[in-house]
Length: 164
Image 1: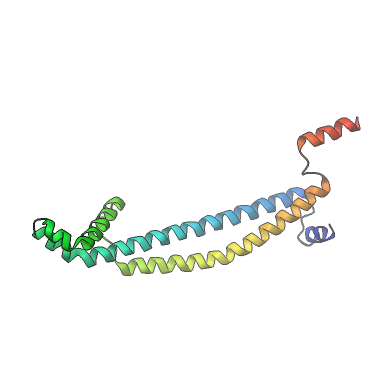
Image 2: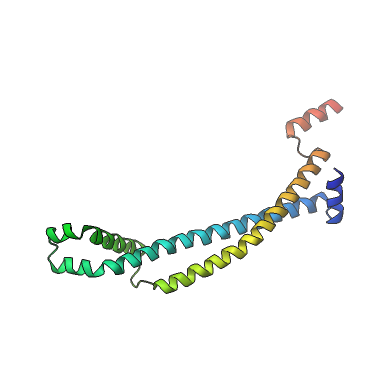
């Protein structure tokens, strides 16, 4: 409890409302940074998949053109089935994404690198925000316990009735 009082005094949080507000703000900041990191990770995963499809598409394009020129021959398909399936899967993925013009692998790599740098910088802030949030929530929980704020409404009602 002495450490809690020292923390409250050092940080000017002697008013419970200020402590609760600062704890809520720290939690909000932590959750915001967490969501920002998760969004960057989701986009990075999308870029990785898209890049794979673009590479597969470009590698198998000649085989697929030859397959079309062969009149979609079953014999040709049997000989080059893996390349044709990769090409068709890539084309299907592009259609699902609604891509008319494919982005270059270089532009995707640049976006990926930018997202990675953003994620790394956000992660450092995320760790600081997490530590601050934990500290504030611990202090708030100590104050709640000390002041009896954490008791449920039924416990408080029982105490009121006993006092009468």
